[in-house]
Image (cartoon, rainbow, N blue to C red; front, side, top):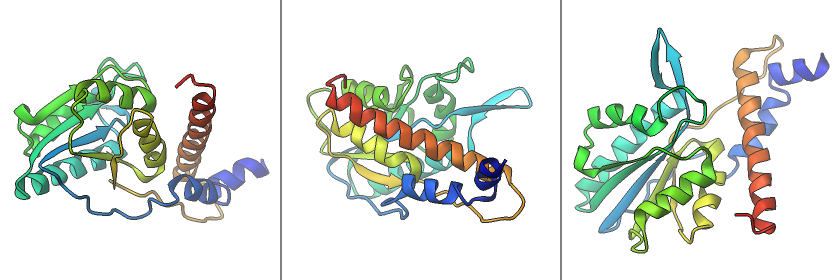
Length: 210
């Protein structure tokens, strides 16, 4: 009961989330190159009133990608957006396919939009996007995701020889309370998922499985 109370009131959730987001608490404007690829990392979907929609964090990533695309074009660069995400939650539609209408509605033309809709985890996101980019690496690669997911995302792309620029779409906060809150449990789960996933990534890299 004490452990549950600690997670729900933020006493355990805050340090865990802080550890997961450390180094990515701020959004730093990226540098655009003549050829720039902007990668949106999938963040899940929810079914609301019978309709499958992007989760809250996914919507912030979508908004960030659209903003970056406009800034990239204003800089005179050749820009494209790659949506990366399959259907790991088995909701019946890939994340990339679900997000695409929202990205198009925010001004990204279909000619500059590519869907990578078969990956089931962060490592597969990077692997499948690398296959799309091919040997001719874009001169700038920008990875857009939430702060808690950024470190694992960057490590995955680095495993395929890329040096992506991070663009943090949102940073989560954990309030300290006396009464447990649902939001704190969600933050605890996200932080633990990322920290365990990052540790597993390093172990698998050490074992040459990645």
